[in-house]
Length: 108
Image (cartoon, rainbow, N blue to C red; front, top):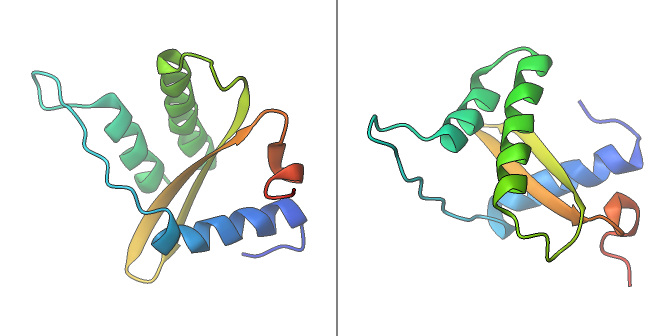
């Protein structure tokens, strides 16, 4: 569902463009039980029906990324976009600089 909200429309455009522009292959290491919490959180976002459940797993991803970041880039806004296009479900993870946010992203 599209809205007239500029921020939502901007994120929809990022999601649409990511199919070709932002394709990054990710390899996951597993523990002794062939598990990986980060991967499981991504899969749970795709498989859960309730937004509160999706948010819980997106929060876990944000927490994990924060734990392993050395903070050289300062604070930022992490956006997890989940959606479905014909024949596939996708997750797009975008980080905006804290002093940029959505408002200034892409402006010179």
